[in-house]
Image 1 (cartoon, rainbow, N blue to C red):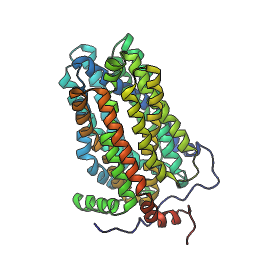
Image 2 (cartoon, rainbow, N blue to C red):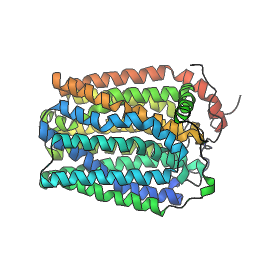
Image 3 (spheres, rainbow, N blue to C red):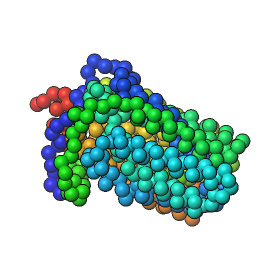
Image 4 (cartoon, one colour):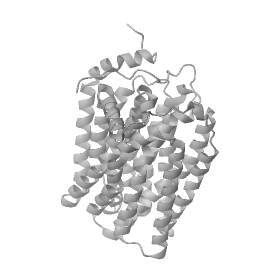
Length: 434
């Protein structure tokens, strides 16, 4: 495909004269979203941990943990591109009310099955697949909705960093609470709390105020034409294509460490549910540090190098885990791992949203979602099979080596990346025109 010129309009200007790490909270709608989403995400991370622990206790086989990861994400892979078209065509605010409500129902059904003792492995797979379908729409819609909550477009990079902050702050808190609850009262309470937590984000969405005249709609056209336009727009521009391909590669070979985390805590480190909770929270703590680092940055300049270095840090952390048999050392390695994962994903998100046009934002962010969610189910299958055939440490070692290779390849192309992105950087005022 021939190279296209970079996107031409509606990119947010650089941040000038605003150094506060929480400046995006000055926007009322975003402040509501931040509070509601923060509460809901704690419940989400509690459910994620409880679900994996439940499956491990039901099966005691790492292969089935991989199957759980596959079933929870394969439908996201199928619908994410179409979700971008939906996001560009209809009101994102109304769509999010639907996706969050359906997620509440899924958590409630899961809680009921576990409380009554009726739960079976196939129930978990079906409910995980249903949530994956909902998330396939929810994630790109929510990502592209951020800019509509902001009165000051220059706050967009900070808002994205704060989104990462609450996501990973919840990952720090939620698993610890879940580990304690599982140990004392069982998994069902984690699912119930998650269902209740969705009420916070629904309330926040209902309290938001928008100017209907400000909404720019995509012209009516066939869904395949709209999808093709979005694909050509994203993959015809080398910097966007490189970022998405790297994210997809790391989603396939690197992010699947989490599919084996419950087995790693129990089988390799000889811990229990509380140990598992601390391991997942350590990832959240590292990611939280990464979010703070990005929130304090004053511009997007230099994030391209961060995007290349982050997978290398992730890779070395995974290799360290492959040889680790000591819980405190594992916690430290997972802090580094969380920092690497978060900085790559959030930096990619920030650069993408700084470059793209508003009328294609939903479709491009659907490809962003597809890059890590879409490859994840296949990554879950391969790492689950590999761990069952060889060992969990061997799977982590191979995964880490592949992450390092991917990061080095991206850094080797960084010169071409910056050359192609230079017109965009000039328009944003990040570098001076020649």
